[in-house]
Length: 102
Image (cartoon, rainbow, N blue to C red; front, side):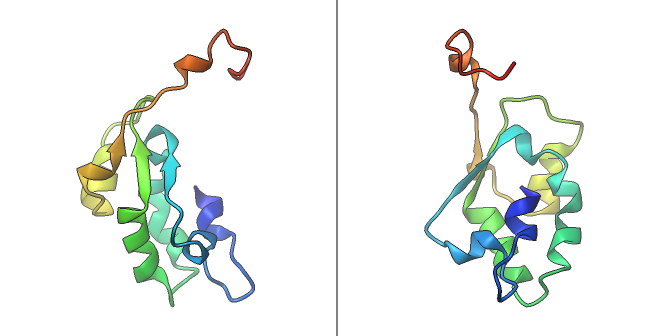
C-alpha cells in the first residue's frame, strides 16, 4: 500500500492519483497503513486532500485476514473510511491448487 503513495511520477503525484478509474483492494485491513498514512501524505502536501478522499472512496479494505486491535477504528475513525469500503475476501480457494504461497 505504501508504494502506491510513495511511488510518484515525475510531477510528484502519488501513483494511484494518476489513474482515477482504478479501484484498489487492500488485503488484511491495510495492515499498519491506517496508523502511518499521514506520514506518507506529508510528502505530497499539494495532493494530500485528494489522496485522502481517494483512500475513502477508491480503496476497498479486505477484512478476511487477522487484524490487530483497533485497526478497523484506524480506518473508520482515523482515516474516515466508511464501512461500505470494507469487503470480506479470502485466498482459501488457492489452497491445494498450487497457487497458494508456501
